[in-house]
Length: 458
Length: 169
Image (cartoon, rainbow over all chains, first blue to last red):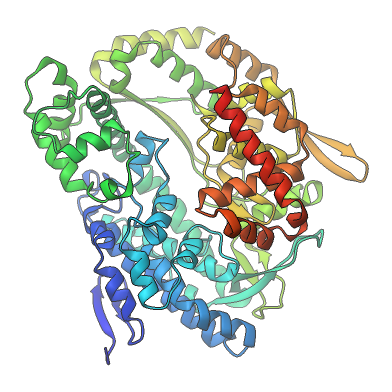
């Protein structure tokens, strides 16, 4: 390849793959990566926001693009430092591969399957297996191009020893977040997600994060230049806050998620007894019978079209044992809102009491309700006074969650942004949005009224 | 079961947990051994750490379900977590006679120091990421040079715990 290969993208304009990075084209062409064309980025949000039909494929290309830009900025800024220049040269291609492949373990309907079947491997673990596991075509491709699959998997798995490079793929300032906010804002049409990506990326630098006790060595971390980056970081945070409330936790979208959670659990119940309607794809049957805990080769065959294809079949069944799955499938395909919603006072104790009472209605009704407790924090921050009271824990939290500011040199101390920003302090404080919502089918209405009465008498 | 009840059962089984680090490692190890916590853990300086768990503990404390009180031990200050009356009542009302799965192992783990738990938890974390044999030792020693001398001993304990889990099952 003598010229860069370019892809048009509605968010970033042109996504360019340079000569010398041909391995990325080969990775894009793997079945593992192509499958992401058939997994929507936002699960069921398209039922609320009709434009939200974008996929994990588009997003992964965008994450690669932003990661590549971040590497270029760091190279330009710190490349003359022997150690940093060497690390970027040595591992830059692995970082690009990790950015591109970070979502290959996502199941159909994105995070929804993990909510339906919490015992299934998390998508990040699955992604690591897609990158370095024996059942995938990716490891041999990486090897052919001189890359170690284990290094790429370690970056995705947050175990990489050079933390600032891992930060590009996974941190509070990562390429993933930078892409998904803009992309989701664009495709939903919700403008709140927009922030100044160009300025943010150009404000990146390195800094050293060191715990107060000095017992652990300082770590070179991805940071923002103190003078330039603060306001764009605040914009990014506001974008995350607003997108979360307006899009990710939108009550209509959560209603559709509740609908599908009930449908998936009902499919699993029937599949375990081998009672899904005749004609169901065998791989879908196996997938639900094992509640998603299937080997990687089967996992790769499960995408949204094959599950939705089964909904069409299930919707037509007239057998009594398929009454619920047929109803839920039909209603999903026709976007008929059949679930009612009741807002409850948010709290862990209330949730536990309601859940116990609802489970008390019996297994027959288990797939007719969903209790949805959302506690959202746009920025996770230690409590006031924690630094003095519990330095190890404070450091752990800062190292995991903080957006860091530095004066621009790698040897400069990296400081958590909240020390300088009232916006971060407010959005990271204890008073954050919480919702406890109960979604249920109308047949349960009388029981819900009774439970409500009983719990309110206590 | 939702996390407040299972954390309540854990506190009921062990009485109190001293230190947030210990709480994190205890839950990570128990989750690895099959107790149905569902927290996402990442790797950090002091071993596997779940910011999701940390956020939940903070929320439970805010709701008055658990108490976190400072404990001075020599020059160190740490925190003791205990269940508040409301949580004890909630657990008793909603779970009845059911106790924490692997409660005996939880008590055994709680007797260990947070450093021991950190090492065992790190071994499990690396194993679940596909590291075994020499590769596991190499990765452990790179991440935890301070504990390198104890690797074989901690690996032995980690294996014994898994055997006990199987026996209990």
